[in-house]
Length: 416
Image 1: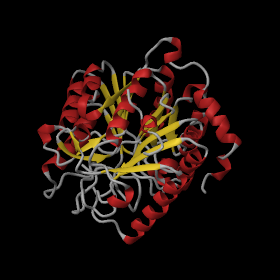
Image 2: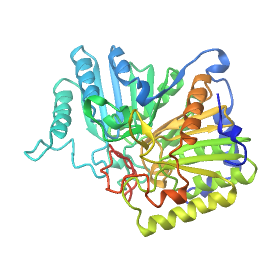
Image 3: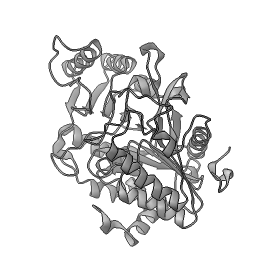
Image 4: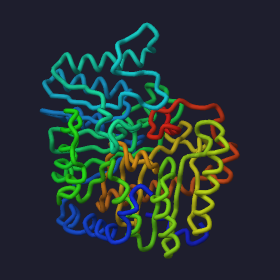
């Protein structure tokens, strides 16, 4: 398997958690036995376009399905959940009530002006509730700062309380590149399925609180030994920064955007200590021409990256995914070609410190190998651009798109 390291050299809010605390986090996250170390393979990574496991997982359920999601529009997913309910499976769902730029508010009554897809979603909410399930909007009182402008941005399915799927993508047509629904764009997205009982137990605690609308002490949950491989927002910043700080040789990263100063500073620190850092972000023009303020932010962020020796490329619509124009929606990090993190967390302060988000660390051979292969393949694609070229909007959509996912009040940088 090729890795970017083989390409050679050519290619505020939480300051108190710096230094020693981050070193301790590294020790917690990367110490002790892992599934691979004891001969058990408990994690598996999937490329959503080539083999998303969602339908198979839902169909396998015998007693319960718990879902926490930002947006769920795909008809096949909805129908699979209906079938599960009809065979006696208990279904509970927590969903973001107001996705950025999405006109369909699924918890509101059906109106004459609703499009067919919106009617389908609202009817599904009613079906779940009528048939003994639970389908509730995420309570914004559970945000990192209660009642702030945050989102339920996680993407998880827990089946029978013993297996969990965490995805970078929503349960929508663009994430699966479902030809039956004729997507205009297909996303780069990953899902990781884990049978690790510690991981399932940890996330189940938070889900159970969220579905009941009860505030939970996430910090206390994350201090337990069972949580050593999990990230949960609003407390995702420190473990992810610690992960970046642990790199000795290489960092390969994909994210929609990188806006948080502490996150970005960790990448700069890594490059300055000799780590080869390769970054891929979504095109600056994925939602239309960037505004002057956004151009200024790009120049500052990626100019600093250039000065530190970070290698940055952008993913644009000229790069096909599943035979359709592609969009980079993934959030993944590979450190030293040995350890991976995959989750729902974008590189924004909102996503890292306010939202409900989930992620997982893994050193499973299949996870590292599959992720490394895709990261490398995307990075060397012919259509990629430098961040400066991306600002010229030569290879992406100029017409603004309606996103299917977002975590910033001024962004909403995901699309269907």
